[in-house]
Amino acid sequence: MPRRQRELVPTVPLLPTNSLVASATRYSGDTARIYGTGQDEAWQTECYRHYRICGEARFAAQFFGHALSRAVLYIPAEPGNRNSTRVTEGETYDVLQELFNGAAGQSGMLNAIGIHLTIAGECYLVGRTSTNDDTEDPTPIWEIRSILEVRSNGVRGTAGKWWIKQAGNQADIMLDPEDTVIRIWIPDPLNAVNADSPFRSLLPILEEIEWLTRYVFAQCSQRLAGAGLLLMPEEMEFPPAPGQAGKELSKAEGFMMKLADSMLTPIKDPSNPSSKIPVIATAPGDVIDKMKWLTFWSELDTEAKGLRQEAIQRFALGMDLPPERILGMSMSRGTGGGSSNGVSHWGAWQIEEDTVKMHVEPMLDVVINAVVVYYLRPGANDPTASLAYDTSALRLRPDRSKEAIELYDRGLIKAQVVIAENGFTVEEMMEPDEQKRWFIMKVASGSATPDMVAQALRELGVDMPPPADSLGQMNDSRPPPSIDEHPTRDLPDRAALLAASEGLVFRALERAGNRLRQQGVKPEGLRSFEVHTAITLDAKQAKTALADAWTCAPMVLDGIADTEPVITALDGYTASLLVTGRAHTREALARWLDQRLKFK
Image (cartoon, rainbow, N blue to C red; front, side, top):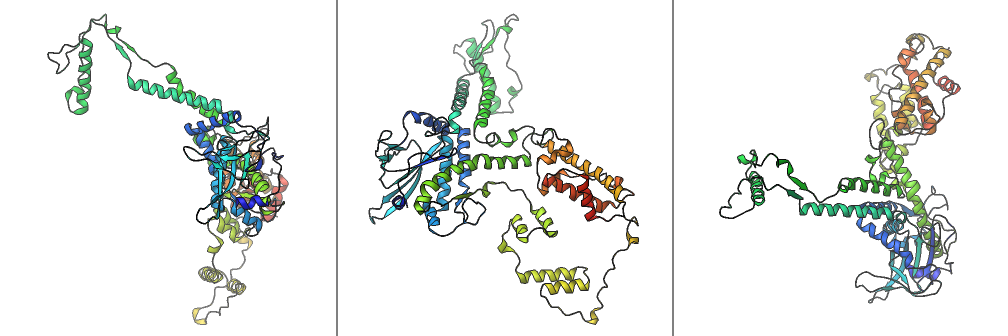
């Protein structure tokens, strides 16, 4: 609660923090301000105006607001470690829950802060109390207010009253000395006590977009008002206008009425023959080409659209966002692979990651710095209190369900991981009794040997009696395969297989590298089979990059070794290189094959 928190707060310095990324200062309702107002707010007022009239500007600001609102604030059990467990009780946790009445209110808080920091570069977090006339109980009120709403009647360095300026005829809200005002801002590089924002440097471009839009509106109004002026020579003879007997009209007026009638009649009755018959007018041959059509628009009409699109592109490049966020993914040329336009799914994932890491999380750091130093630590009376944020809801996770199942089948990951990657929870896993029943059914429907079945059931704690003699004898165990069953009746020669395998590996890496280059991965100084060393892929991406990489393997391996086990081994080796980013070496390939194949 704001009033309670103020009582726990010792005197704090009214100066920005030393952080180069974020600044914050906590005031009370009667504290002197440390920066001036008036002229410093002129550019911020203009930024808010463009936010209201420019759709691209509003989208950019709203994007930051919505992105920040998806983050979740929490107390880490280990300060500074975002991967630690979350604290769910205690004084510090209670103080955090009081801020904007918990997670739901904090989402709205982050949304408003994101919008204000994008537009004006600063805002106020105000905590005040309101007394109910019936109960006299103080009610906590938390608000995010713009720089134009929070005022002070004291000059710089002089104490004065602070209040919130209300719009319209609403009375201003005077702040008490116990109320809390936390200023959050992005420091101006030239004068750190003042604010800076992405919109500030883009004001000329926003002004350009506004005037070009006004020009288009003006041209639309002008063209709607008239289609220009048609000049015709007096020597032309026009047919008489319909239904105007006894009324004297000029030749031009008569022609206009005749032309209007010939155009409106087919609209009313499409079957009327006039829709196919032209209007006939006669004139001397030397005056036919003297008709002139004067228009009132300029050549800028054809350029206005291109100029406005260029200004929008400049705005997108100047914002603290990837340009594709404002222009759309399809506006990026050459990143879709091959000759296609637009961003591929890999490119979209990379843009998503860059947006969160390079733009959203730094703004969240601004908020965390302010909340921790000027609210959480004083309120909990704990100078070591820490706060973290979870942005997992913002990240575009690739579909790894298939890879998770494959790795689980190979005994490399936990069952809980497979459940999570497929979108389920641990609570939805089989109970032990259900799992035993499932296993018994699998064994009963399979071709396992009696010894395997009995041992597996004993491990699971299932005691089943042997089948009666009337049911027949169990199938005998299958003997191990002999060398005669081997298709080549021999084990492969190590040197020949290693030489053939290395050629196949180089071909597979080269194909994968070419695909990566088509998708925008173009490291300098690397050959096609080395491109993977500049980027790491997940298992699904590696599989896609190696598609059709082993089509010539049967011909290369003919007479050297069995194709299927060798291709399986080489595919696993090459995929491991793509996932880890390691370069191929003959020694590593030899060790890989030695572990998976037998040689002479």
